Length: 169
Image 1 (cartoon, rainbow, N blue to C red):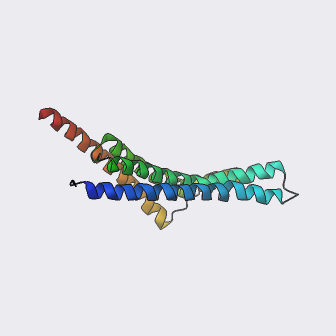
Image 2: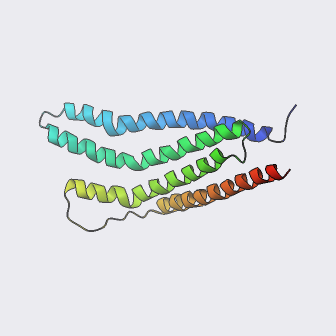
Image 3: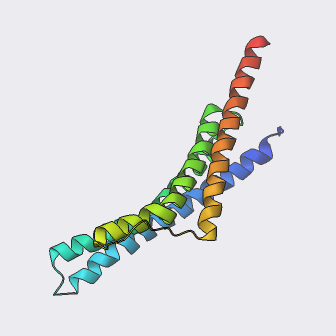
């Protein structure tokens, strides 16, 4: 017998699978782009010493920070989909997961706009003040992240109200 939440469960199952596949692809892509390929490239450069290689890898780790944080949002979204697939619509874990999605998006946007440019400037030894990279997409992602954090708080309150109502009945 089908229930009122079956379509939500089905969609959550599909999104859970898609999130797992995308996470794997992105994770491997990040590993190859920021670690494996630079190391292989450095091995072909006879003049590159260990200090230069470590600086290159350090810069690549800094450049990988925003995508890693966005990957965290995808992992949190997958966890939310697991809970929704299990039929937990107003669950504490769903509320926390939605907040985690928002937090990862907001931190990823902050990393793109402020953290990464300034860390690169510092690591490279460049003089200068505060670097800001305020792209439209970054601002939108940051705002959506903040909105998701707020939505997670709202869901948390809804879960608490639902729990209180269950005690009244």
